[in-house]
Image 1: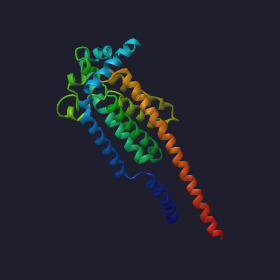
Image 2: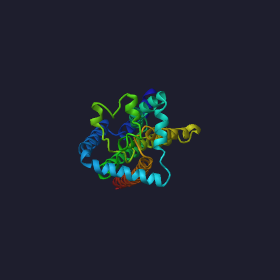
Image 3: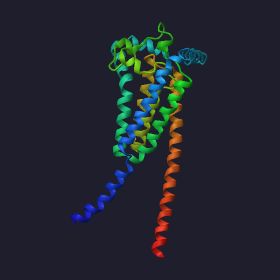
Image 4: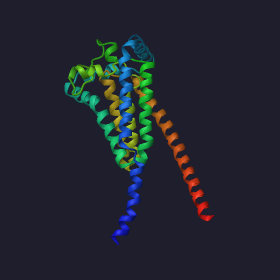
Amino acid sequence: MSAPTASAEAPSLHRDNTQRPRWWKEVLVIVWLCWVYDAVNNLASLRRAAAYAHARAALQLEQTLHLDPEAALDHWVAGHHTLALWVSNYYDNAHFVVTLGVVGWLWWRHPALYRPLRTSLVLTNVIAMAIFWLYPMAPPRLLDPQRYVDVVAATHAFGSWHVGTLATAANQLAAMPSLHISWAVWSALAMWRIFGRRGWALLVWIYPGVTAVAVLSTGNHWLLDVVGGLATIVVSTLIADRWQGWWTARQARRALSSEGERTGMIGS
């Protein structure tokens, strides 16, 4: 009885393994994205004047709409050192840890969900990097250091990209769109697709909300950057889901066609 059981389980395990993309290909995609980011970062200094002009325009629009909470949040957080340190460490590290953790978990445990979500995340980064070059924008902390406190630098947060060697590796003029927001919404969406039927699943959306407060209160993004980050992930996800639907339907048609040909050959 044990032999048939092992035989029956083998195909299922095989299907899971073939469905999961090869890890080294996924790593190559990450390496390529890092290379593109670095290339844009190396050219960022050529767009400095445009970045500051765009930041002034963003601030003027927000003030016209009476939607400019950045300074108030920034001053409030900066006035509470312990809170500022926590928020800064969250800003510097959570988006990497959470996003990469979700990516790895999806790849390992939920490969069917991983494919469209992976495509969405990659497309989000490609769109964002194109905007970083075409429409660079300085963050509040650089536009007006007298008004906006660089909370991350002031608290000497762990892994800060604002000072020291790491500062040269980060594009300081890439506020629009906020990838912190895009990645946070993506992570919440992935969790929602896994656990959406459970009552507590709505709690996953707290993460993007907290991230929005963190990026605004540390002087790193304008409210318009947050909106831009949200728009970027929405567009990317719609495109990725549409592509995955088309690809799945195409594969199903090919499978039916192959099955029909095989049945015809057996019948003849």
